[in-house]
Image (cartoon, rainbow, N blue to C red; front, side):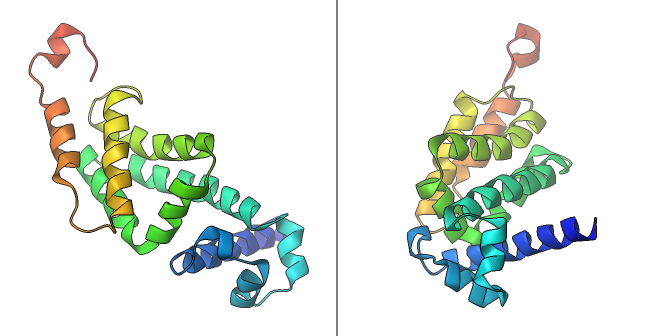
Length: 174
């Protein structure tokens, strides 16, 4: 039990170091020695947990994506969930850019679907697809453009989808 906790702690420490490094350099320029120096661990400790930096990155995408999705799901409404997401991105913009640029298409899609699903669900919009694809497009552009002012289109789109008259009566899900 103690060993498992220590292993998870080490993985988390490496993932946090990777996120810090991604703020100043692209993923392809991150080396194991950069991570081990930041974490003050031996290279062999890194290799005990991960085969390479890309495996650490994939682990981070899965773990951190699930953690953020849980935070979004715990939000009381879609506005709060969207605000939580928009506040989480700027401090880790480099990491989110790496997800957009380096993650496999399947991992990237699963990651963003996992983040947008709680927001869409809270807004009463069923299933990933049209609205989620539009939100993802707006979100991706915002991240790539430097996380400046939040695109008004995100909230407006959800607002229009949730306030659409006759949505419930027609039996048409969001």
